Length: 112
Image 1 (cartoon, rainbow, N blue to C red):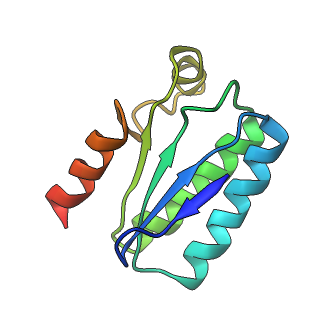
Image 2 (tube, one colour):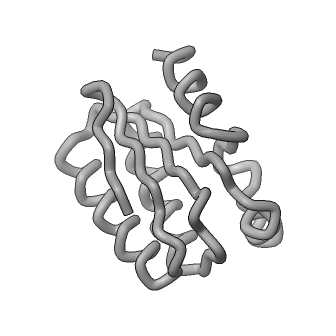
């Protein structure tokens, strides 16, 4: 995973491909948000092969932290198969999905 801090109020996360690393990295992002509450988060799924309930749980925790602070979580480059996992879990309408990184950056800047 790579965590970028482009502008002061934005964190961009490139998730790794292996599920065991994804859960760990999402926990790390949750800790960062705990210390830096004024940030929006973009998570790039372009390297993700599969996602499990552990990662979904960490995403829900991250989303709750951000919503509580009036901030946003945007997921981009989510593959069809991974998007189906969100759909089957009933979470497709819970998260904000965009096509790619430029669309995610535009979405963040539109509302900030």
